[in-house]
Image 1 (cartoon, rainbow over the protein chains, first blue to last red):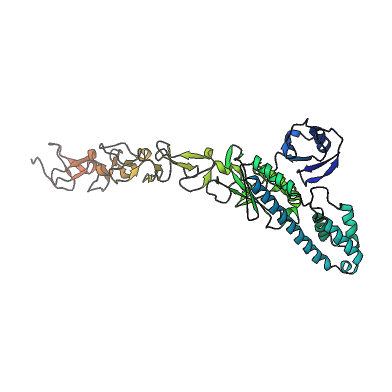
Image 2 (cartoon, each protein chain N blue to C red):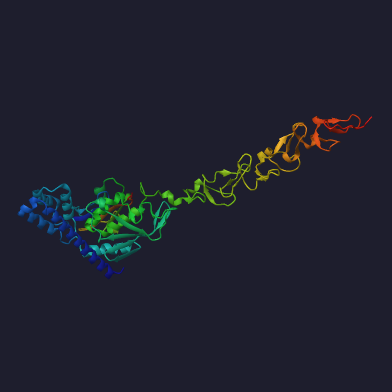
Length: 72
Length: 386
């Protein structure tokens, strides 16, 4: 299935990606972010903050945003 | 802001954004028209313009044309890298649906303290921003589509305004370590913000700005320690509380540069306003409580410069002399000069001439062996005449 992934870290990324049916938020995070700590990021699905075990559905918008972004 | 106003705001935002995209595309076509290949290759020109037109369709789905196709359309024209980059970026923009924008606004209303839309300017109010236990209060974050959409992430300008500014001491330009005036320096958030502007992801834009406001990073305009500093009551400089002291008399705060005056006798710390007297002899600072006045010269003096009293009154040792007869130190009031030898004598070392009644030192006096009267040698006084 397709979900819209928005990664607001660094240069940013916003595009549809193909994922397995029934994938959870935590699994998608691990897939995209590797061994980065989930505590350092806020993950939203369709703008709502959700738990890691939430199951994604077709067309969901998943946003990953760092909890700390330093200004200059 | 109620739903009907949110819907109107969403409509205005989408309309403004689309207008901006149209303007950009118009500008790009003018630039492309300067390219000879673009002018002469009608088929390639038509394909590119058609591709650009597809990108102006509304939808939050994947762009109607992907990057490879864009490069293929641009290949015949051999554009310079900068122009090619702009074309690609703008052709990958999405114009979101009204529903998408409305949901962004609705979630902003839910997550933040307030939301307003006036004259094309969207304002979202944060909750209190706290960094290192210092409360900077709420900020208005602005999103204004009447300004141009940036071509590059370095062009992204973020505008915020503190509702009740908490300035560091003596500074009215920085209501936050990363804000100067109303400009927030986005730092590491710059590129991500550029992405949100390109796609009109308004919710993400404000979320990122809010996170930047709530993060204390390296290289701020003003170090956060400045918010803990206080002002010296003398020089007006700003120091942290640990680097300041109190004047024991007026109890005001001073930096250590201005409070380092201590009384030479009691060693208490005074400010320059309260420690004004100096010992007339040694010039050391002396507080009002420790100061004594010399009864001879009436000047102020410290205890180090006060001589042992010879006659019961206080005097500076510089207002005294040594008696040439007994070597005692006596104050100037208690010294006399022998009229014969002109040397300084204390009162006890002076004797009175029985002839002229004037006083002279014992060395200059002569004593009658019979009656013990003393007189000047110069006085031809004959006593006890035979």
